[in-house]
Amino acid sequence: MSVVVCSKCSSENERDAKFCSLCGTEIGTISSAKTPLATSIRRYDVDAIRVIALGLLIVYHIAVAFQPWGADLVMFVENEQSLEWVWVLMMVINIWRIPILFVVSGMGARFAMERRDWSNLLSDRSLRIFVPLLFGMFFIVPLNFIIFNYYYKKEQFYFPHPGHLWFLLFIFFYVLIFCALFNYFKKHPENMFYRFIKSVINKPLGLIPLFALPIVVEAILIQPREYPVFALTLHGFILGMICFFSGFVLVSLKEDFWTSVRKIKLITLVLAFSLYLLRSYNVIITESDLISSSLAVNVLTGFESANWMLAAFGFGAAFLNKPSKSLAYLSSAVYPVYIVHLPVQMLCSSLVFQLGLPAIFKLVIVLLGTFALSFAIYEIIKRIKWVRFLFGMKIKSAA
Image (cartoon, rainbow, N blue to C red; front, side):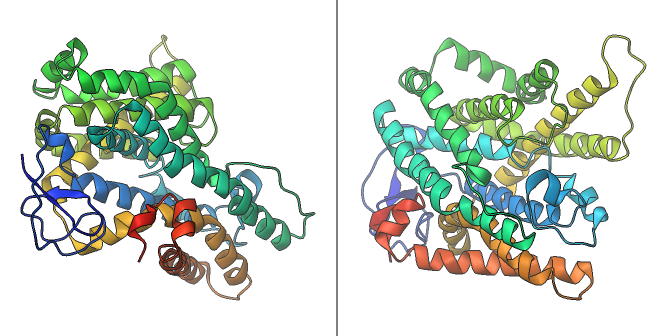
């Protein structure tokens, strides 16, 4: 299958692409390049889901600042007047906002391995994940502590901590854990495991139990006290590893997966939303003597999370798998924006929360301010080569 190679950043795009999916440059000439597998063609829907999920994560963090537990539990600058109704909306995304990013990261690892062996993948991920993580721990995350302690007039202190960049730490561990296995899968695409997975997802509704079962089993075995708490917890690490592995495997099956997930998009959406209503009203099935009510909640929550993710990929495959300049820009920006957004949010909150405004106005101002300032910082980052490196961006594409 032929692809178009961007003359600016050398990334591969679909033959009929008008703009580069990575840098947004208009593609006027075609360079001959051939690849035997469809996985080497960029999935724009995966890029879009990644952008949307990280955008929702920032919105989620801002919503936390308007909850009565924001300061005590997660050390966010907290508004005195709470907006607890906002949390009802956040409950729609709070159980799958992080797991879907792990799935997307697993898919990204598969795309990256198309033109790399395991050693190249490891070195690439070390540069693009571990370097920003180390930089963030010593120069980004401390800003969160400084702003928080200054706002609440506490003694300044800091110890090296991944903070909101814990997600990068987990991804780096997953690459180390699965590197050899992923390399085997790449060299043996017709292995027995893949054949089994393919046979299941090609059955009507087969993808739902296949994807959901490991997630539900994790909930049964780990029994997290609070399912949506993923940061630096055993629950978050194991669930993230399952999702990362699942993303790699499913995207390796190419159209078998995408066709299946498109077919069940409405079913999974209805299932997910129904279970959300059950969870939001705290209706728990307790008749069974075999499991406790808390275990029932975790099982249902895990199954709901899996269906939200499948619905997202299904609708993404149906409507979002197309290139655009805006997607190319956001795909490039989302990683640095994710790294810098929390200290930016903390700064905006510390300034805005002192104003005598209704809480809803403060929410809007902090939301707009966080996104605007984070993207402004990205515009600076992308123009300085050595700074790009610290934020996981390719140096050669610096403008």
